[in-house]
Image (cartoon, rainbow, N blue to C red; front, side):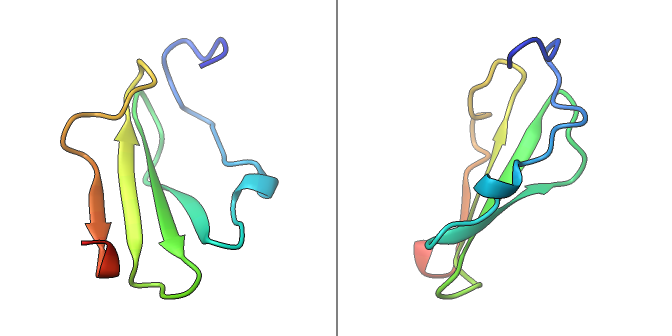
Length: 71
């Protein structure tokens, strides 16, 4: 986490990484010792993928969720 003292507090997604030709990306909630990212398809906004990352930089077990055609 590059010196983040095991916290994501204050993190924002850089503008250049907030969207691409496939999806838009956002932080869900308020980051702390964990952060939740959500990707939303640009082709169909009901298609989403979401995951929570822990202070160790790894996905928290059981937090991947999918909606729409991704289910």
